[in-house]
Length: 237
Image 1 (cartoon, rainbow, N blue to C red):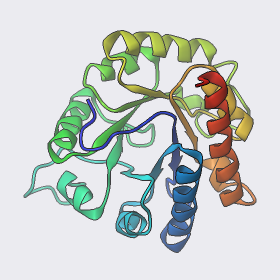
Image 2 (cartoon, one colour; image 1 turned 90 degrees about the vertical axis):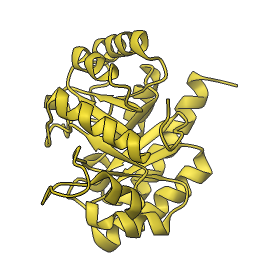
Image 3 (cartoon, rainbow, N blue to C red; image 1 turned 90 degrees about the horizontal axis):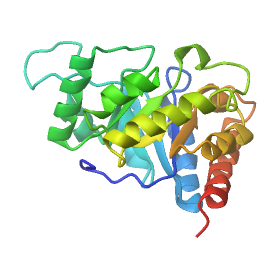
């Protein structure tokens, strides 16, 4: 099932988008690397393409994902993101179909196929349980399901997401129970992280909740620690 890497739940994603880059991105990645090792959480870290080599070189425990990838073959394709280039740059996987970079189902299928060929994991964004089920047929590593209207929102909505998350878990689980289900819509605080874990997802994460905080590194640590604690409560050993 896992192509090239093995992601253990719980998984926490830090999506940098265009908020942080260069030296600041590497600094945050190094702290995330420490948090991943200390807390036993698989951290997916999505920097700008140009920062992937520096982030990968500075870390050992996080999974560096690109923010997009194209199903292009070696050769023609100016301006596209080549899977082999991402792999050589140090990426472990790629995000696909973010609400800010939508793809058709055929494009998602092609990108997952190419990622599989070079050993990159795939995290595919979906905007409904029904779309999550359709994408699950393509066997990505992670299905990230969340309504676009809630992404980057300013209020905690974990309780409102209950039906959405439970339906997604049910539909995707019927198709492929090995797929990790992530929901990170409007996750702003450590409590939001715990609430998402309580809904039954194997993964969550945050962008603006971390990167817009007064102290992004401290906020990241608090969220990762909250995930570990919530996971231990939900699945005691």
